[in-house]
Image (cartoon, rainbow, N blue to C red; front, side, top):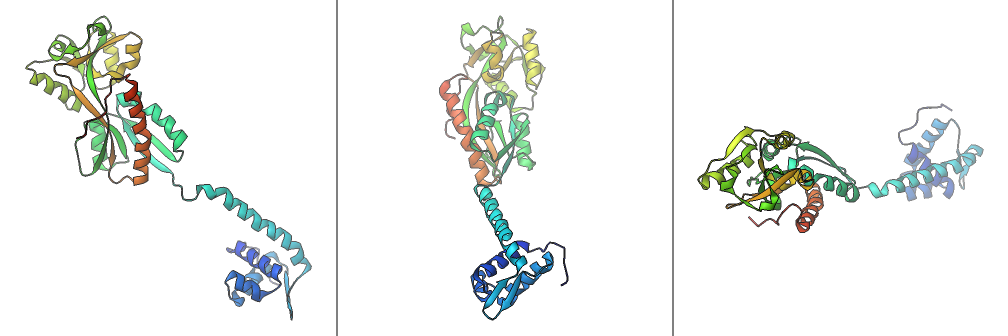
Length: 319
């Protein structure tokens, strides 16, 4: 007999054919059970014997008989098939599950107020969701989403409707004047926008949406703010505030730790109040399962924080 030591591509099928023939003692019965022709079944048996280098089956007038080698191999062959069945059962819970990968952009404030809760919830409720995070400002995230880069979703303020985007509002908030505690005293209560002009300010660069919002409100009130520095990073704003050289106008949550520690004071701006709306913004091409899974995680977090009232958030009004 010619011996072929290469593992056959259909080795499992050949073992299954051998076991079926051996258990029923008939190629005819085995062929019917396996939905194979008898020549095809015979070819599988011969390929298995060629691979093993030994004859397993002997045909006779009444059917098929196992050789001594076949009798020795039958028990092990059954174990092989049983092991395959157990292996398939082990992965059954994972069949049909697809890992969801999302590159999520976040702003400085949402990074402090939402992202950690989102990561905890995702790990507990959606283990197949892989979140990759990118820090930035709303305007930058919107440009990335529209450009079709790897960014799939982002927390963005005041996102304008666009056919390529799906916008899910999460909450609304007012902006606050924030400065060193002895300069901005929270006990003085809300501060009219006209009074903000008395404070030297550090604000985002002129091309950012938050800066436009603040300056538009000032112009509408017939006033001009003292903007001493244009600075984007929150860390630099923090350093300038702690040096008592500048104040800023930002959401409460951006410096919530410093406010809680008494290092900074915050006064809500009124007359007029300056509102911002944060939304989860997704590219329209994001798969529905990914979009619904992400929204199902983040929306309850935002709703819970609205109810807790720590940041002064409100439920978003319909647009």
